[in-house]
Length: 96
Image (cartoon, rainbow, N blue to C red; front, top):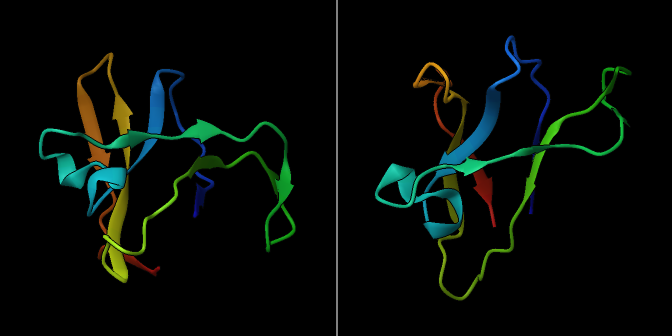
């Protein structure tokens, strides 16, 4: 599964992360922590027609041991300021 989001960050030291249920998504920070995403290597054309370099992260879920619905959110981490900003909207869900 490919997690992908385009969000321009204000500061160079900020990084987009994905957090959620299960070990692969950081188990909601319970000792494992969120997963840092990386910038795409090339631009893609979004459905809006914009050319962007989204934040991406790929993971393979083992369907024999994970839930059929995975809950997750994105967050922005700034290590220099020791600050994390979480999405305000309700959690996102994906069907596996």
